[in-house]
Every structure is written in structure tokens, then in C-alpha cells.
Length: 184
Image (tube, rainbow, N blue to C red; front, side):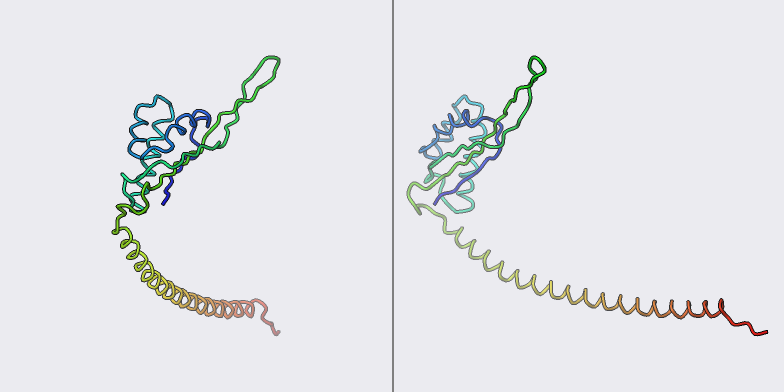
């Protein structure tokens, strides 16, 4: 099983980041962490965090053993470029590209299925069971809410209708008074 972790728009150029990425490929997870401690490159702290994230994803989400993992692949792609301008002679300007990188670390098992935690599988089944029951409860609640809203709307419509009748009656009386025929 393969598990990955991504870091997007990391503010270093891909060319510099690939120097560290090439070193990590194929190492066991623990050994890769140790190697990163002694590399003197600007992107190593971020690689440490990303590798740690990939390992914890594998442990917590899929129940894999930390000792059974190795770095299968490290993919470094070019991210968005920030474009800036530098003033030059004779009123000209030259373009400066501040490059970013998208990094993805893929961690896989050395021996498939070794020391996989059965607890995670049981938890997944329990969560699926809970979601079905929760979905039914939510459907019932939404139906009740819809019925209550319908009742409230009916009451409002009835009140408005009654208010309109009263207004109409009052206005007719006023008009009768204003336009009364006067007999002499």
C-alpha cells in the first residue's frame, strides 16, 4: 500500500529542492529521517516535516507499521511563479521569477501486510455502521424540520390573509366617508 503527503507552493526553486529529493529515494523511513538531520540544505526542515506527515498518515489512517515503510518516491514539480520587476538602465525593466515547488513524498510497505493493525479495520467497520445509523437519524430530523417549516408558512399565510381583509375593510370605510353624496 502506498501513502503520500504533499506540500504545495514551497518557496524554493525546484532545482534546489531536487538535490535533497534525489537523496531520499529508496531509503527506509527511519533512515531517511536520520539522513535529513545531517543535510545542510535550506529545504531539509520542510522535507523532515513532510516525511513525518507521510509516516503518520500511514500509521493513523491505514494502520501500517513505521518500521515496515520506505520512501518509494519523491516527486518535485514546479509550482506557481511569482513575477517581479527589476528596474534597469534607460527606463527598462527586467523580469524576476521567484519560483515555487510542489513536493510529494510517497511511502510504501517493504513487506505488504506485515504488522498491519487489525484494530484500524475494525474501527473502519464501526464508523461505517455509525454513519448508516447517523444518516437515518439525520433524514428523520430533516423531515421533521421540513414539516415544521410548512406549518409555520401556513400560519403566516393565514395571518397575512386576515390582515389584508381587515385593511381592505378599513380602506373602504374611509373612501365611503370621503366620497359621500351630499343631498341638499
